[in-house]
Amino acid sequence: MQERELIPHLFRTEYSKIIAVLCNSFDLRHLEIAEDIASETFLKAAEIWGIKGVPENPTAWLYTVAKNKIKDYFKHQSVVERQGKEALKSSDIGTVLDFEFSHQNIADSQLAMIFSVCNPENSGDTQICLALQILCGFSVEEIAGAFLTNPETIKKRLHRGRTTLRSGNFQIKTLSDQEIKGRLESVLKTLYLLFNEGYFSKTNDQSIRRDLCSEAIRLASILTENSLTNTPLVNALLALMYFQSSRFNARVNDKGEAILLEDQDRSLWDQELIERGNYFLVNAYEGREVSKYHLEAAIAYWHTTPTGENKWEHILQLYNQLILIEYSPVTALNRAFAYARVYGWEKGIEEVEKLDLNDNSHYYSLLGYLYAGVDIERAVGFYKQAIALTKSRVEAETLAKEVKRLMERAGQDLS
Amino acid sequence: MKDFLLIYRADYNTYPDPKKSPEEMQALVQKWMNWVAGIAAQEKLVDRGNRLVKSGKVLKGNGSASDGPYTEIKESIMGYSIIKAMTLDEASKLAEGCPILSYDGSVEVREINAI
Image 1 (cartoon, rainbow over the protein chains, first blue to last red):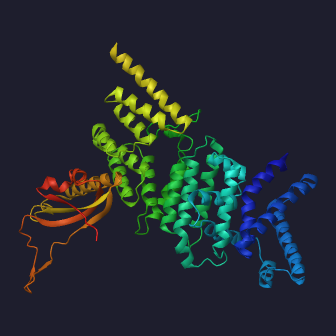
Image 2 (image 1 turned 120 degrees about the vertical axis):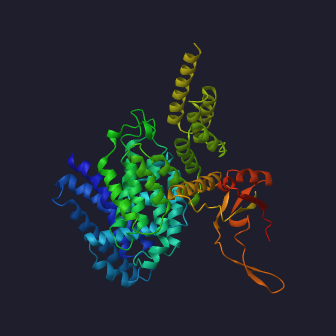
Image 3 (image 1 turned 60 degrees about the vertical axis):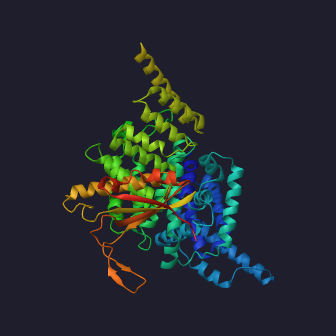
């Protein structure tokens, strides 16, 4: 029983490490070989541990088996080579024979792997899928679960992504300063998307959502642990992730319905995570650069503070800066909400109506929310438009409840 | 969508008011930010633009180069931004909330005729 739980757990943590270290010893064109060896290693573990029991140090056992398997592979290759077929360069065999699964090598390899996988030539969705599979050891089914789509779609997406990785000629071995600078931005973007995929996921499965978020944090932490990649931007992104994660227990109710920040039970916020967020936010502001990650982290920071003097003024100014850096409908709507908090509902309504986001359900639900205190009939009308537009069943239910509450209130006002 | 240049004009002697307290200056900056970000939130800001330094030179065809524009004139150009809109009317509407208007200043809205 014990090993049945142990193997999935080890698989998550060790599978991607083994692949990273193996890949770091050849180059990325051999990704599939590394994956085969990692899979065979776990298969062997399942067989042997089932009979003989779990070894004292399961991780070391896995590394030894993986190492032996790669040596066997190269022996086999050199036989094939002598038969005149295409094979690996002999220099590869040399490097392979003296590689180690040391802590340092694992950390370096994982870092190199992150930079290889986050190839900006792939679309955002594809990058997330690749990261989940190669860097986080997720199965195709698990990824499909996170994206609420079928495994076939994910398989195709992964296939396309891998083709791009192979043709990209990106050498995983040498992570020079230059290469890090050139790709750090897209690495951060992938991790940001990965986190958001979990945090704002289409799926209501809380455990998948948490997994995605904690994987994004784990990968971002690898970046802060290496002096080459421990930049203010990385710290800002990590701060943002910790602040957001701190509210995980408070942001949905038992039925999976979202609870507005304002209405959340603050005692459910994880103080330890907030403190980690504070730590990385302070680090982030050591440089002079202010990125969108800085601004989003700073906004998330203000949300952890009690409503008090100038809180919303600060939040509004941060949203102002954010929208100037990068437009997005979500930022525009959040900014308008902050505007309403500072200048009152009516001015806020004016600001929202200017946005004219007629195909966005959140646009209408925000109008409904702001109108609720001013004009119930219009508020209900806007909520109904939001319900018609939303693709999320849970959101539609939450909004329908709000409509019912308002109608009841209107009924009471009349009588 | 067409691009429009907004040219902000005001009197250097009254804008920004040199007697203003730091808090008032901060409030003025905030007003500008709210206004510009409000345009960006509608996805209609092309270039936030810049402020201009007070001093400059004015060259003329006769070879003269004088210090200027004279800061005593009431309508010095203070800065500019570029926005986008379907029509001149729409662009003018976007310019309406510009903070410089509350300081006796003006905003000139001009369609950009791309070369």
